[in-house]
Image (cartoon, rainbow, N blue to C red):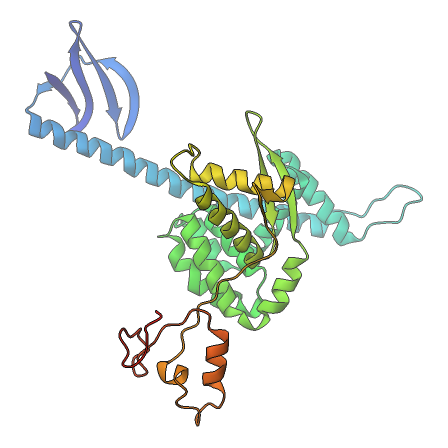
Amino acid sequence: MFVFSFMGGRFCGLSTDFLGSDLGLWIVGGVCLGWGVFTESLLEIDEPSFVGQVDDALGSLVDGLAQTERMAARVAAWRVEQVDAIRRFAEVNIPVTTSAGMRPWSRAATARRTAVSEVAAALRIPERSAETLIEEARMLTERLPLTMAGLESGDFSFRHAKSIVAHASSLPEDLYGTFEAAVVPSASRLTFSKFDRKARTMRERMDAATITERHQRSLADRETFFEPARDGMGWLHLYTSAHIGLAAYNRADEMAHELQGPEEDRTLTQLRADVVSDLLLDGVVGDRPEFGIRPSVVVTVPALAMLGHGAGKKPGKARQGRMISRYWRVTDPSTWRPRRNWPGRRNHG
């Protein structure tokens, strides 16, 4: 038998008769206060009412969690303002001091080093992380007002704000406002991973003219490093050009699928990891050496061009199409859709 306790018309507790005593879990205002003994306002109710009251109590807990998340975002905004205040104060008030005989720092360098060391000590983070936080705070307070306003109102998390800062930083300053207006409305309704993908896509589209130049700059930062993990394990990271990374992953995935069989007890994920390890350590997987990227190209050419027609409009295209197409399919020239049983031709699609 379930027993409920009410206080001021609001559900407060639930109990069962446990070893002859009314021992229950008290929930007040959506907060669990612990186990206790009900002594007054006890009321027996039927099962439908019980389910409704439990739903209401769960809703209160979820609402409390949502409010906590919004408050965490507001606290993050307050921290951003405080960090930027430290930076601005240091730039205005910190004097330049150096040891005798040493080349003096500039005022800007002295202020930056002071702010970084103070923030790092206060938050117990590395100075590199403190430097990043200071620059993020500068961007949010001075150049990304929509993002800062959304963070202050608790509309999205600090991770979302960091993503906006990271992508905006690589854009020209005159595009900051346009970029913000395009991505901030999505920050309150998308998970971080989905939002980060959207922001990255939007950033590429807004500055497509310089994508080659930006790629070359980023390519200079390529690296690989090892990160120790628990239980004698570790992560091997590779940061490189996207097409190289994707090609390497696809190669490992293809070879892992080939190794699968009725006698193979490793999962596909484990096989991929073993394939990469074998290639890096030995250069081969079993008796199969691997060299370079091997692309597979499928070219779709209009049927009339494959048959040699339409050369008047585009001279040489039919001959080129036959030369470059290893795998080809016949398409309807009016719809560009694959066509089966083309009259007089064998369908290669």
